[in-house]
Length: 97
Image (cartoon, one colour):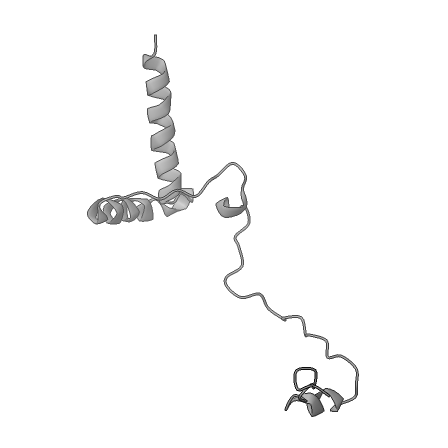
């Protein structure tokens, strides 16, 4: 038999015959990794899109502080930015001839 056609048995060949012979089923994870999403999460809402930008750290910190004083209304920084940007867009449209 030519050397190229001879198959060398794998060193792991014997492991195939161990056990019961039935395939092992993977267990379903009992818990999902990470925090559960809040009801109405913006990341799942089709009307929202993730955006990145640069803001001064001091501005962000002060805005979060002021929003913290108003926690009763449930707004966060993204809500504030949405409100301000929407107002700016409306004012720009009003300026058009």
